[in-house]
Every structure is written in structure tokens, then in C-alpha cells.
Length: 163
Length: 125
Image 1 (tube, rainbow over the protein chains, first blue to last red):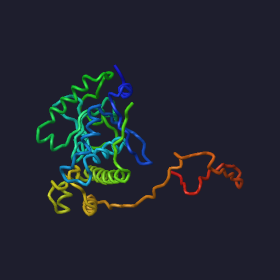
Image 2: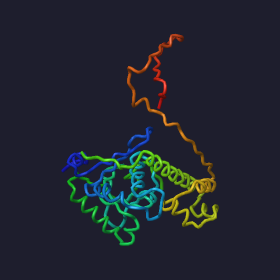
Image 3: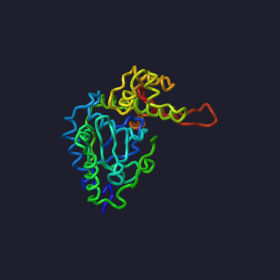
Image 4: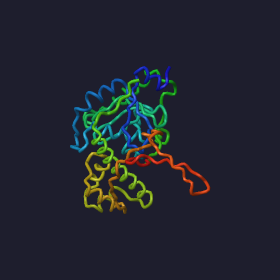
């Protein structure tokens, strides 16, 4: 079994280094799986906003990662949400165009395994499948127990948020 | 360990940060006003004269919020938006090199204090 840092050193998990303003320091962290890292580097830059937004999906993801890491105020349901009735402890972080699926092994620490355009997910009814994939990946990851924070209470998984 | 950073330019990083900050401030203010006086997205939409779904999409990040709309929403929230461009100061704390600082001993008071003066062009963070 291994800690998150052990898995990062083994290159099984990859930490997103945020771009923070000079007055901010890192208060939360996001790690991604190797498969997701490849998707972010290869596929995400090719995506265009389905809502014709000023920010491209890549820029939206950068904003999400930076704001999350900076400990910015999050709004429950608008910024993050548990996937209830699917798998225990699976959460999504949201932008206008994107849904990032993962779990919290500890408060303010998010491990993500799938990222996809929201319209694609909704058109093809992929929520259950995405959550299932993340749960399978999580179950197979050699992470020390307990691997995730169970339940749907946002107070357990992030600080500095409001309903 | 292969940590990585999302590759967008510095100027776009500042742009994304600003857009995000505006939306978060609106969320925060709406939450506060909702708690204080039960204000809803529908109330805001009615005040502005648009359908509730428009406000909902703007708050969810599925529609860009124009500067004018920021003002309208602020007004509906009973708030006054402010905007300023802060000078991009160098954080000399991170560039601190002791040999570049001049130590001034204040001998005019009973307690002597060493004051570090940064070189010209650098200001305290």
C-alpha cells in the first residue's frame, strides 16, 4: 500500500501545479491519474466551448485548478457536487463546459480520473459510466486505507465553501 | 514525480483568474443576500428583466457575464461593484537578498531599531 506522495513518486498520480497570484498560497491540491494527465495534455487543448464562452475548456480547467488550489470560495452545486446514487464518495468539480470526476482521499485533496465535456456526458448519458470508471480506478489504486472520504457531506471534503 | 502545470499564457491566466473571481464574488454575495433576506436567482432575474434561466446559466458559467450585467446583478443584490487595477508589485520577500538591503539604525529614539530598506523599485509585498 502507498500514500499519495508514494504514488506521485511512482508516477501513478500527477500533481497539478497551480499558477497562483503572488498573494496566494496553495491550500488545496489536485492529483490526476496518468490517463487523465494525457487527456489534459493531448485532448483538452483541442476542445472548443460548447457554450461559445470566452474561456476555452482548457482555460476553464486552468481556472478551476488554480482556484481550487488557492482555496478560493466554492459554491456547493455550482462548483462541486457529490454524485449521489452512483458510487460512494465520487464527486464532480464543474466548469461551464467541463466535469471533472474523482474523489477526496482527504479534506481539500482531490484525486481525479476522468474529465469530459458536459454536453458529451449528457448526450450519451455517461454520468453513471464515468462514476463507475472512477470507482474502479480508485478500488484498484494501491492507496492506503481509507482511500476516500465516504458520504455526501461537503463539510467533510472541502473547506471554505458555502451552500 | 511528474507534476505538471496547465499551459496557458500569463496574460490568459490573469484573464481567467479575473473572470473566475467576478463570478465567485457574485456567488458569495448571492449566498449572503439569500441568507439575509431570502433573495433568489428569480428575484435577480425579475429585477433585471430577464428570464431566470439566463441568470442561472450566467452563474453556472455556461454564459459569459458582461460588464454591464455585473453591474445589474450587483444592483439587484444591493451591492455596488468596484474595480481597480492594482500595480503589479514585485514581491521582494521572494527576491530577498540580504546583501542588497541597506540597514538604517534609527538613533533618534531610546529604542534602536534596524530598518531594512529595499532597493529602489521594490516595495513590500
